[in-house]
Image 1 (cartoon, rainbow, N blue to C red):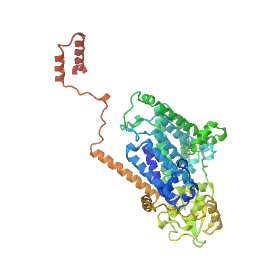
Image 2: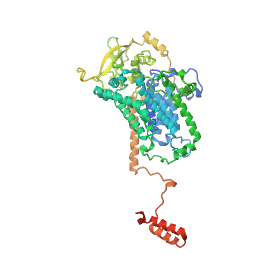
Image 3: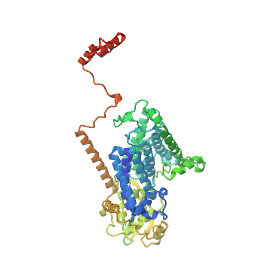
Image 4: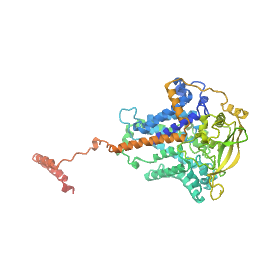
Length: 608
């Protein structure tokens, strides 16, 4: 639970900056343009943005308030154990679902859906104690916890199967890792060094990846043998650590590691944070809450069955061939993102290199200067950045768009428009340091985009590129030369709904709006990696202080023993002898013999 809350905390903190730059009034896709024109009832709202008019807040302010409430609530839950409750998880999921429903292309990724589904399972697994008077601690029921393991199985197994089901020849001839390391979303410097390994070793690594994602989940995840499940846990943990070291830590890796723990049991940790299960306790718990268990079984069956519908495309089936009851169940939960599909859209591992969009600006249309982003390949001499666990959304979409070749996306048109206007909120997504941005003093008059293929350099072959990390080759023009008055840009803006003048909606001057403006001014201009590093350093400092104070005060006090397990204080030998002598005259027959036998059993010689 704690890892999921920490993941949600970091993600909401980053979303606070993302919404300022992407969905703010001067961002790429202002969120006010996505608001419904007709006011809907509260229960029919897909996002908390519908509460803006009643609160006297503009759409941008509601987004900022949603992110801040999620950050504050999740931070409190990380630091305070009683707040790791089912009700807190439910609130966090509602907040994030509100952001997801208005996020568009920038939030509709595989790991966003995974975070929503993992958040739902956390609601089922976590104890519900905030609304009760008694202790909130209780053992999780096995039904909902097995559903967490089922999610991890779907994520891992379908990711491996999709590599083969897509027909990608690189995975069949085991040459995928030779190209995968440079085609990752955010490769690290270590990926360059791993790329230089012998070909036979990289082919062996491809075998290990396929076995870990296909065979290991089938054999170990649901095995009744505990050692097999532990083996599956350590294999998946090792695999995720390899992904992190070569491709930066992302939200998908953090959630995968979190779901790995569903393969473990309490005995593996030897934890003393809660009471240990007694023999038959789980059976008594199930019998004592039979009604609640039946409800959870129904929910789990609904979620488990409906989660199979998206995977019909992998088997070549159409949704119409699925049972009507299953289709109806999937349609009922699709709106709330209760289940997701993972690994379906596998990208071919191209041997041509890593496609990248390079933006160039000019004042006269003759001399062009590149706008190199912070978090993706641009300058071939630049070291691959370490950004994890920050997830740069703009670079991620540019990377995906370069692979698909679509230059008419609304977000890309909005990006070009804001760069030509010189909006500092959008410029901060490319470069926070003004010295690294060539048009920080004056916005460019013209802008264009080119498509290059990037490869890691090979010291044995690229003798002239010994100081470079990348080598690139021009592929084609991605977007023609445009300016703010260009008819092509105006047409694309009109098709995307961004051409008209939509004035910023200002809320009332309330203490909430004033506080949001103050926080916005402090966050503006800071990079996402810096914000996340600050958050992690703050949490690490708090936990360190707690550990130091606990050590200074003598460590945690032991829990009082229960009445059934209280040990009796041993009696002094003199008292035992006096009582036995006083009771000797009154004992008769067999009773006297039994007492003498007990006294003899207690003697030191007898125990020896």
